[in-house]
Image 1 (cartoon, rainbow, N blue to C red):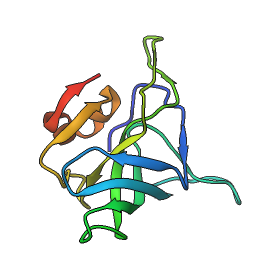
Image 2 (tube, rainbow, N blue to C red):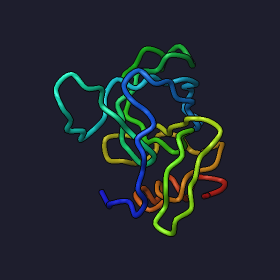
Image 3 (cartoon, one colour):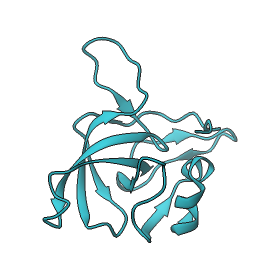
Image 4 (cartoon, one colour):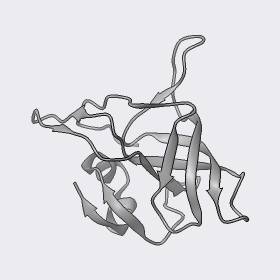
Amino acid sequence: MKGVAARITSGLHIGSVLKCDDNTGAKELEIIGVKGYRGKRRKLAKAGVGSVVICSVKKGKPEIKKKVVKAVIVRQKKEYRRADGTRVKFSDNAAVLIDDKGMPRGTEIKGVVAKEVAERFAKIATLAKNVV
């Protein structure tokens, strides 16, 4: 997985609720783990835009509800700083479900996707309507 050029402030942690932004049938996700996070003892794992998280599906179609899935965070409310000095923040926290190979499970992405996600996951960028 490629590195990200921006200084991503980790605005989400274990227990945070995300909106699912694709057409897989999931509506709401809760973070239960962060892939590759190495932190201190008794600290909640944190994640930001472009991070791969392990989630539990809280709301959605009955066949996908209560399943444990992997997702990529595509938007976060907490602002972060890009390399050129601009600060970016979105109106909600959102994620896109992926499989074990890092490919998106859905066939379309409803909202905008951060540029940092497009650098790491090219297939998500091609499915997105707009990259900010």
